[in-house]
Each structure stands twice: as structure tokens, then as C-alpha cells.
Length: 317
Image 1: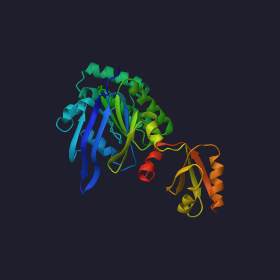
Image 2: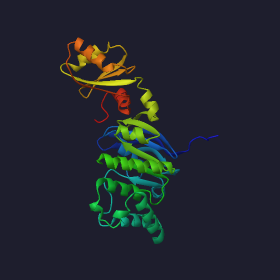
Image 3: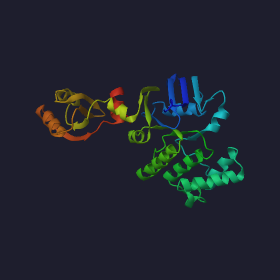
Image 4: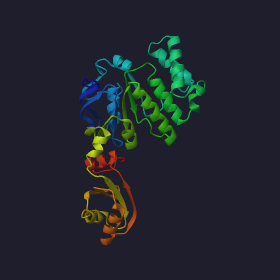
């Protein structure tokens, strides 16, 4: 019989207020279980990076508590750093060291002997497909390679928990897929991973559970599949048209099977039951109301649709 999951990250009313009374994180209560990939999904400015900063000792909370790996982060920050690995948004590699040296000296910093650090560095180079670049200057690495090296370095000291802040931001599609593959391998090996992202595909593909965050608060939390189920529609049609989009949205509310119609980011979105023949029906309904459709597309419900239902705005804002 499977026991209850063990929470390895726990926050209690965790709050951060920046100077000027800017509330970045608002009384956050959160639990992340051992061995899962947990995603914080939300637009820029939602509070994701500040949350990770407080969990990894880099941002001092205004109030509340953060427990990571059983350690109170702010009561014992040095101990907390021993059990976590962190990959930030910015490139933090030492530009004066080679690829192998970045790994080797990280191992020494965390108390490994010289031989242990060398062995761990060589193993990481193989695991992260960087062995052929071992002696290269880090300035010569592509964005994808640099990101893989930062992930390799972050887990060299075998932390229990890995934090990644926007791990694939700025990466080309090929590098993003390579990074996702590596994160999947770490997950299979039992690593607990918390990542922040505003890419809905990344959250959907990688995460066991996702918290949708905006304005410092968690708006919804569940598995990606369950979150998408809350949309209640089988199909979402996006329509661009000439004229008054609000009037078009009201007109389309009378479409058979329409559950919800919204204007978001200058596009009318129609949430529908069923998928058969929806595009011709939508166009016919719009044209019957005197509207000229200039573009339309059809998709299944996504995490972005969940976010829009909760906030009324586009996830990318």
C-alpha cells in the first residue's frame, strides 16, 4: 500500500513586500512532494522568481516561513544550501574557468575531495552531453549548452531538491527539447524539481502538478490534466475579425454548444462542447451577424485557457 506523499518544500503564509509597498508574494501556502516536478506557471511579474528566491535564501521574506528539505531556510540558510541546487534565469557560470573547471570547483566548494570532485565532474560531462566541450571556455558555449552546464553544476553535490527559474527562457526549440529530456531523466532518478515558467507547453509536458500564479497568489493547483478539465470545453476557437470584437463575442454567445465567449488580447475565444464542424458553424454565425472573419484557429483546452478563465487575461502578459 502506497503511503502518503512526503512534502519536501513547505511554505506558511510566505510573503514578500518590496520597497514602495509592492506586494510580490502574498501569504503563500504551498507544499511540494518528494520526487515530483512541480511547476509555478504564470506571467512575468506573477511572483514566481521571488518565491524561488525566498526558498533558496536569495530573497529575504517579509514574513512567513519556508521549510526546504526539513530545514527552516532563514533560521539555517547554510544548511539549506547543502540540500538544494539552483539554476537562475541569468548565466552564473564562471567565465574565467573551463567547462570542466566550473564543475570541479563547485564540487570542492561543497566539500568534495579533489578526486571526488574530478570524478563527479567527468560523470556530469558525460551525462549532460558536454564531454567534447570539457576544455572549452564557457564564453564559447551556445545558450543551450550553457544551460545544460548550469543544471549539471547545480546537481553535482547531489542535492535533494532542484530549483529552476525559467529554465528554457531564450533557448531555441532544439535546445529546449534537449533540456526537457535531461529534466525528465533527473525526475526518473527521483530528483525533486521545482521550476518556474510562463511556457504552458513546458508546464504541461514536464510537471506532475502545476500551480497557476498571478499577483503573488496561487489561483489554482492540480495536475495539468485536471486543471485543463476545469475549462469544461472540448474545443476552443480563436477568431480575429473586423469591427467591434465585444459585439462579436456577444453575438457568438448564441452559438449552439458555446459555453463561454471572451475577448482576450484582441482575439475572440469561443469555448465549445464537441469538435465536429465547429469552424464552419462559427464563421456562419459571425457572418450572419454582419462580421467579417479575418483569421481563426481551433485548439484543445490548454493551461493558458485555465489561466484566462481565472484572470481574464493572456498568460503572456
